[in-house]
Length: 412
Image (cartoon, rainbow, N blue to C red; front, side):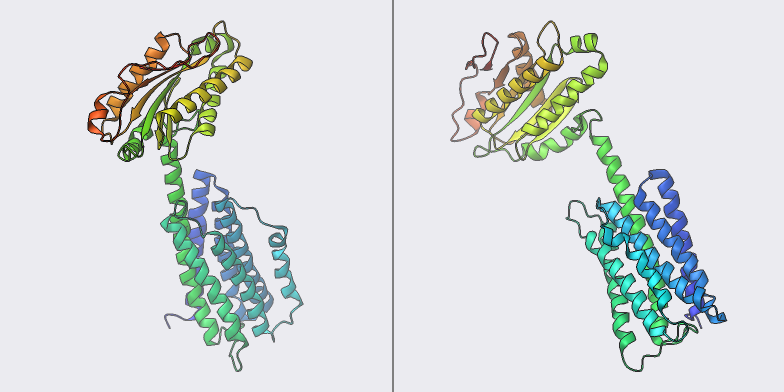
């Protein structure tokens, strides 16, 4: 018969061995420990299913107890892999679960098929359901493969709990030694399907995460962890399209003053630390719904949403003061290491990011020409005519923020 127990076990061995080998090869490339755990789980199923073939020849201890124990151990490894995948650590109670396998030794051999089935099913079902629960991730972190793995483990765990109920029903025919009984045959069929689906889901899940990690690496600046210019240019249009009179925004460009002396006097490693510190400072002060990036060298960009001119000035001043206070303590140079900033105020949807960056650069270098360590804000009068209800200031105005002789903020 096509679905006889020997055939189903042979299919299980072939699929589990292939999955174990594939995930092991993936682990060698990615070095993700969850892959190693999952590969070990499928290897345990391969060995356990091979040993299960011996039960019909009278090897009850190896073909039933040891084979079922390896099935429990495989799901224990699956759970560890899922925990590793979602960044969770197993509790001491879960680490003690393998001891539950050893309790099967206390069961009488040969005459306790139902008891073996109940004990094994409870352990396997509990492990599968716990792994499924951990994979209930939010939409941002859940891929198609993750959701498939979640539901596959969920139904797999529920099936094993259902086996407990069926096993305890009166007149249930279960003979583990000879593979007789509807429960046994259905369990073998479900096992093959579950292993196939779990293997495919794990493969898709890991591949998606690897692709996502590659995408993140491609769009992140490796030094500061901020977005790079390409990612900034790809995300900025969606933010710019949301600008309105009632939801003003701003493009803020930052450039480090006297950055070269830091490299010359303290080494390039010190210059890298300075840029990393500035990136951390920007992230700490960044308002919600904002976008920040390192455009290149020592130039950074911040796209602010729902921020009026007073809020932009306050943010710029805070960044400027905190940056100067930190660099004064860590980087001794003949001239103070400070920030120059240029901002472009936005009161209507924008489509030309390059033009905005150019305007921001003009304001930025106006701040540098004015003595550095200051802010220039560009607010073109043209926006006043195209944004009803908004009264723009004059194209050139000044609003100094005193700083003990140092150049403060101005509007240009």
